[in-house]
Image (cartoon, rainbow, N blue to C red; front, side, top):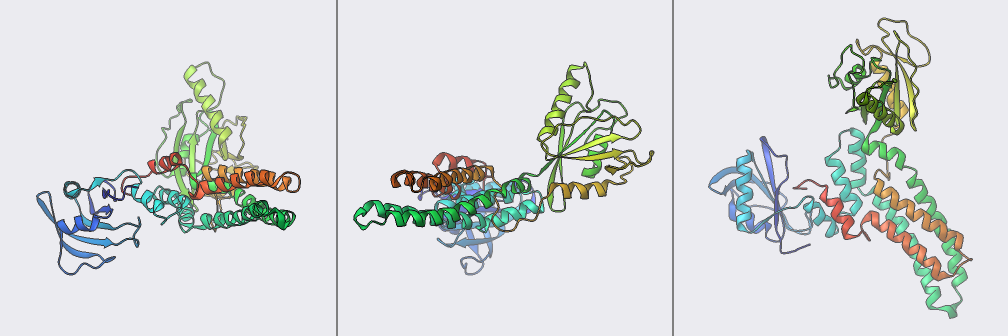
Length: 432
């Protein structure tokens, strides 16, 4: 981090609004603010102060606040201007700060500085991005738990236990005359067994955590004109897919999302499954099959006026949906609905939620595939080390334990590479 570089960016969405916030971070932030902003009274750190900002030929009545290092989001001196939400006012304020010497912030640079100054661990920083992009109550709560350090706390506890084992084994090597190698190995066995159990329990949360973070994929599959697109519109509560009486209207997959019961559901409307010589429709059928295969839940929709059974191959769960109950008698063995009138759709939503098995996030949960992969790698290293205690040399044991520490440190940022850090923060928005 370049300590001589003061950065500036808009931290609120681009466009017209009631209020916009321009943020600065760096050792000259407060100085730059003072050259443009004249408060009506004494400006006290951490408190909004009313005043006038003069920037690039315009003036605005604003609120401003300063945060002195290290008691700030980034750990550096920071300043914010809360101005009226005119894009032209914002542009002129940012240009004025740049003319004084500030530089435009890069994506995620404020949070990156918070990580580099030790204000956030890497997994907590990633949770900031997750919270910003959250589209359901479950995603918000999951990101909040991670930002509070729930995952970091669990992994740090395991990390410290393994580190203590490494210290004991290194002492056994350094002081062979003390004859403590056997005792250190036995102590290592107990600690590593406990650490391995904790990591395995944590890894087991990923399937559910991933559904919370990315949403539950629900594929709508059935024969042409079974009512898939009509049902999609009903579940969304708006007209998204084109609905006609012509078979084969949907040629490609259509993806949209809705929230229900705090969970996010990603619907995939697919082309009707049938034998066809039409090359375009054939590709649509192939995409339908792929969507069903990878879905968490498949709604197999059958038209009660023309009950054609469609074979479905999926790694997920299948819910049988019988459509057009408004004109036909209901049948057993599934959920009876009318996509036309909406009858039974609320009940179907409840069943989808129950089938998804998405529970409220409580405590440490893995929601990120990067974290999951690293924890699994640490589990592998610890499993091998446990099996090798008393069989192989202490030196070999230490290699595996140090590898496990490196994998866990890759989650929290203790041992993350620059490439990984750059990749993570490149996905952030500018101003955060």
